[in-house]
Image 1 (cartoon, rainbow over the protein chains, first blue to last red):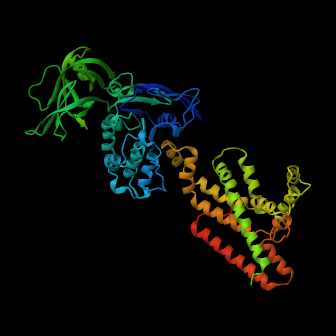
Image 2: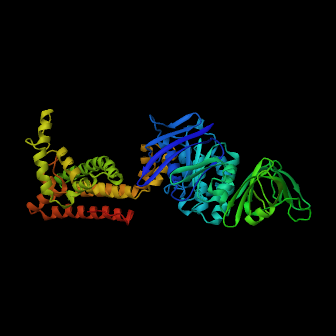
Image 3: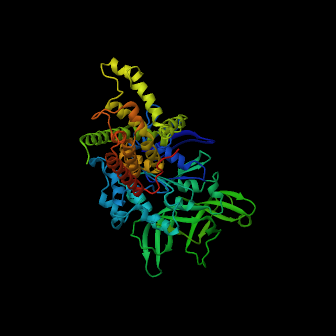
Length: 355
Length: 226
């Protein structure tokens, strides 16, 4: 099942001309700088922006083509805007029920009480939306959208307007959306942090065009894209919790790249997690170091290399089946005499476990 | 005390104001919505036409209406052609005149209220499966409630208060077109100041109370905008 889309439209001097196909599951990030057309594309998908050329298919259902364009209210989607857009004349309960009651009972796949409990809104139901904090408002907006049992959830920078505390409040909910819902999510963001944490798939947008589209771990390590060459380049590895080591306070997780040790996190065995490794946190040695404080050392081979003048070299490593970026100095690369296909050891100083 | 003629005039006035207000809401609501949302070039001329009764002497409006509705006028001829009567000097003619005369007092508060509604709330409603009419009644009407209250009170009060238009197109037929403002005029003509005081004082007090209600409901409503 795929989501296929093609949109072309003009707004003043801005042109959007995109075509993409993404899996109809998991979270797809629409990522790009301000003015790339992320929000415009999301609005076109929602039917809020009229396109000169538009095609949109969700699985087997065509929502828009040359002969027929479903109006926004005819599209089974959920939309959460940056500013949450709660109805000021209704309390939280009224806001939540607005969409819920417009869905025929036999099409409701999510129960009202579940969503309220899930997003922790039980104590807020009688509240006036104007008296909610930013984080609470976004939780209500997400719940309101979920209660329409959407077949596609569109999130437009849902945490961009929040402060750090608000972001920290919302993220766990977004991650649970990811794990517990079968609804595909399109997530607009210009903050790479959010994307790395949440997205499975990514569409890179710039000046109204799709620069690249694919699984996130692939896009992160592609040398023809700007991400791999940035100072903050990073890699993502999917893993599962394997074991807890109470003696040393560690958690072991298994991935296609091998078993990683991370600081103890209270997660059930078997739980899917995501490891995030900054390219600059990996150092390379030709022989396995026996006397080192670094726990995560893996045999690897050099998959590809690129010089990033003046001083850096980016090395893409293959750890088992996983691809990981390492950032070293050009001087080190020369001293080690690195070549493509060369076996070596990757010493990973720091691994962030995202769960 | 109120005479029978006064009571009949009062009843005629209330009927007229109620009818006119209902018709004004039916016409004024879509018109105000269109004016609030459109980017059409026709907006400015139409706003100007609607605002005309604010500046024109009522006799000018009444004069043209008299010509149009009378037996020689286009609407009068149309009525006759369909087997009806010309509308001049009838209650129906009075309702038509009142609707035109009070239109800005209904359209403007509604338009102001509609313009203040955030487009994003309507878009959010659309993403929550609300069709256009549904959005209007579930989002626009409640959010524009102060505008509706103002429009109803002003439309009603202004219709009760009209004189010139009524005199021109309605004349002074008891039970048909004689309204309070005309009845007061009659009392003064007949040097019955006591009768005039009673009606004039009553209108003054009622009008004050209605405007008080408007201002109490919403401090920031611009009553009349030119």
